[in-house]
Length: 572
Image (cartoon, rainbow, N blue to C red; front, side, top):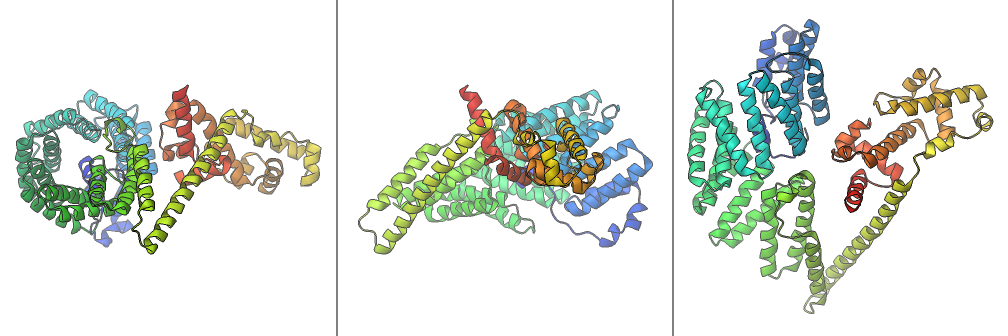
């Protein structure tokens, strides 16, 4: 799955899959086909730390369910697969659950389908849509008197609010969740649910400055994880205790706990680099508060290295660059300042993209223009420093030339992009492709060596095909379309090549891109989708293939096109 969230949040959602050992003999088809649904379900959950193995059990579960024509078990199979497959496929499984069970009166379905969609959207960082799906799922749970599911969904909404910075509201949701688990005496039956609740509650208390309460729940969480032998959650409680000690100004104890947590996280084969970055961030802050600047900066630099490896960041870690920039400014190290200002600009952009519904909540210490101005001032300072050696002067000159070149290229590219955008927005609805269809049939026949009536018939059928928008379906190949149009692939290829002046693959892509442009111009809701979701909507298999086709057709990236339309709408 595409994971914008760190592994901690995925674990709390119940969506974290990593690596585990499994007996290969159990994956034999003969063995799998002879075990019961309950056994397959148990095996799926036993191997939830290994997505590949869990997927095998889920697929066999679904196969048996379809063979028995059991609707609820088919939905179960879709739900299991939706938890382990990549985002696009998982989202389709969620839709299948909803379609299959929408008219059933069942305690779990179709609510589980909406919950699965909510989890997937949450992981993609699309919090607004995730919230909408959770609300629908919770309404179903309430109607069907599924109290536990209703409470779990409220917990997920609390996680979402926590992620959006609405920590006070989130705290209320987590309290209700833990109280319910305790009142219904589910601690022994489902210790995993109780432990996740304790962790969310302890973290929420820490960030709401209720540090004594946080400490109580951290201690209880440690005890529960030791009893249930839940190593992953134990390490998270150790990490949270270190953060809580930091907030209590107990910096030495904080460093000890955070160092222990980092060591434990590093011991796993599938390392949570974001978790390690958070450990180093709070170790660095603690050391700085103890006056140990050298070691503190060392840990902040480790955070920077990890974030570059991940090419991702969380809101709390952006302050890493404020610290590093300030440190090197005090040391008059202009090159290091430029390095970390550049990193801050990069990660600020990533943060704005990944947390698009959180942007108003983020307090930025540096605005982009101010950062660029400061960066330019530093370069000018370096340029005017007379004591630089010849070697450093040469390096500085290269840096200045490179930066000027980059700026000029960016400015030129922006002008070109702007002209291309305006051209697309002012373009008439009739496309180049359809203008080609107005050639005289007699001329076409001469070039194609095909009967005039045949060419005319195929062109008319292509017009119907284009008008129906069936090209948005991913299934079409040259052979399948030729069969649908009742002609052969050789004739169809020749006619498209001559009349459209492009090959079949580009013909289909152009139709899809023209449709995407038309809908993006007019549909605000579509512009709010991720590039991956828009690609799926337009019949592309991947976001990359959609972006490449869009750029080939328009000379613009789809993200730039969408942003420009939104800016234009705001101005108007």
